[in-house]
Image (cartoon, rainbow, N blue to C red; front, side):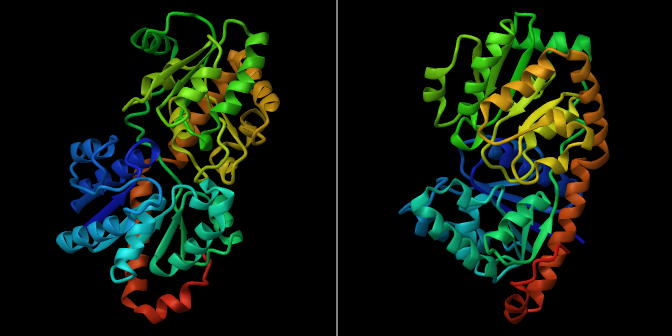
Length: 388
């Protein structure tokens, strides 16, 4: 059965863009009509179009603002023009504007890509939590990428019809690394030194914890003077981070395709303060045979092979523990290579993006059934926290 799927996304770059692009590509290959509505900046409009989706411009900023009524009205116009069978809202702003615009009148799936209240200031957190609780009645399914993310939502009082769909990666894109490809990637990137290299691929913002990583890196430079750190990504904190970084830290800026950086690295690190529960960068790095070090955000342990946890998981906002984990792997390349090979096997078995596409179809079908049962059914099932 051919269907029309409307994805609405803000932000339109980084991990959200890759998730939406992969879903759109898989759904187009399935024969569906796929429409992606997003801001014109960022990478999503280009990559989604390249993979076969119809792209519509939706001018929206990341945070709530006086422009919200205009953004909501624009969603209504897009929905009226597309006439989708299901609407998939990605991240907090699309979840806010989309649910206000549609209000349950169409099968609606909301995917937070990290709960919005974790990013809110103390003054706004209560209001954001109240909205997420209230807005849940206008989502026929809420998609979390880990059990940890779902549990976090439940603990905050968000009662809704949850589905857990773990993130996946395009295995055709994430090629494994060997010694020759490692050297070739460094050459293409202009990495001229021969010492250990750690790479962080993430937006430069408080969520991703690069400030904590820089504190840890000061300690690593004392232990491993030849080591280098590259921060790949753009974001609002670049100037502040650059001002405090040592000469051994390089800022590579935003890239459309970080594959070469994964291959060039000896390990990939993400020091997040919070996540959706399963960030894409570590999964992509593991698919490229790279060991990872990540913070213990909800859901982080779910995507790692059990043997990797002592090497890969560190407490939040503890630069001493982060430095110890990084230096352990940077000074033991044999262990790093073994963990990387195990990581690739694990990702191929459990996180193939094709499985994500198929799982999402199940979510859409469940959402349509709940919608078909009418608003009374939504009221009865809002408190149901089961995973279908």
